[in-house]
Length: 512
Image: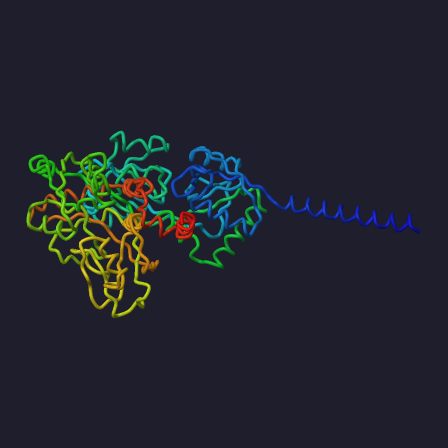
């Protein structure tokens, strides 16, 4: 009897193990691993420095896998090689594929597309004969097109005909010849999509219409094709804007054309320099002296401007921001190093204000004993600037520095002050404010340049063009260079004591 029971127990264990093994085997079989073409393409198929991936195609595939259980093997061939291999059934999936005659006979196109790409006419940044804001400047120009992009070419001809523009079109049979034609001077413009990998190297003359693109599978794999089609349907059933939102995320309509300086502007620069820039003395992180040299956001921005136009700049210092405004208004300085604004259209100082060159996060520091927000609040602001129109207040108190603003809030003289985060870090390293607490949400602060409206308008134009040519990477680097981590400022004794009260209490007790 004991033997029978023991046999039964062992048999049950064996059956359970077999069932688990079978279940695991079934689960393993259910995980289909698909080969995916993943050519490095800006915004479409991207592999980052840490090995992670992104892009429109990648995010689509991640979402599709939630409905299919698929896993992926990404293959990073070139675009041309990926297209060839996909046509020869060497991959299972490929994204951002357009429909064109004579292409894709072996490919399965789902019922629903993954999104739209736009057609662009691009030109060399140093070409002054083409204007991105004037379609008439395309008159008589030679446009290079990829011969197989028939839909793009049709749309281009429609645009040219509608605007009564006569341009010549040159056809290219291979992608290499097509992509090199603009740099070689064979054509004036190139017809590409906004997926074009080298878009940042050129200016955009025109953007028009859109072409549907798809995530495609192999026709000889009907199971994968059916699963792909069904998954895309389900995704759109949950969120009809899924594809459009992804393209807007990776391809915002924000083409930054390079501004070219005219001969007249170049002559003005060399005849009238060096230009005087008004800044506040010892005003970290905007302007300060380190190792006998001007440092900070303003000097670094002007170094980037000087590299473009060959101009020279020298700095005139003042005790407060308000005084720098007066230096420019009175003609003692040519340029205001930084103009603090929240509203580009509102300028009470009578200056010509350039486009923004930097955005700073700000934080509202309020007195903890004062209700906020409140119509009776008093805003502490630096002389020459305005209180934010988005924050309730009944009155404004002006001070020369942000430090004085914080002291006023700490003492109760003012209710709150809006301060750039990079400035606040510096102030908290040198002092401690017992009656102040932060309010996290706050409007951003924008930095611009300012010139007197009575000056030659050419200086304003030159500065504006210089700022247009700065990249986001350049301005981000300038801001990064001027933080406390790079400044390595030492904490004051008072701030050290208040930030470590227990330790200092124990030290004092131990000494006594």
